[in-house]
Image 1 (tube, rainbow, N blue to C red):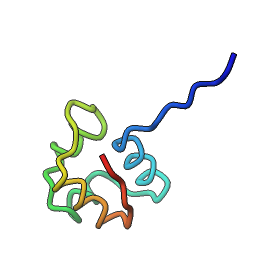
Image 2: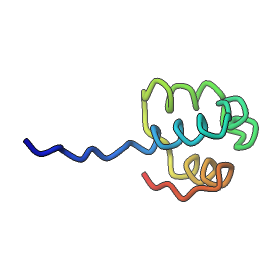
Image 3: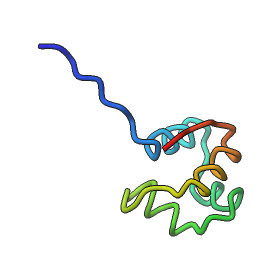
Length: 68
C-alpha cells in the first residue's frame, strides 16, 4: 500500500516553526500586534483560518513565506 502525502496546514507549519525556535504565542502576539486569544484560537485550536493580513504579519515576524 502506497503512503499518502498529506499537506500540512499553514497553522501547523507556523506552530512547528515557533516550537523549533523556542518562540511562544505571546512572543508572536507582541511582534505582530495580533491579539493573543486570536492567535491561540487560530493556531492551537484551529477554530478558524488566518486572514491574509495576519498571515503577512506572521511571515514578517518569523522570516517565512507561508501561503494559505
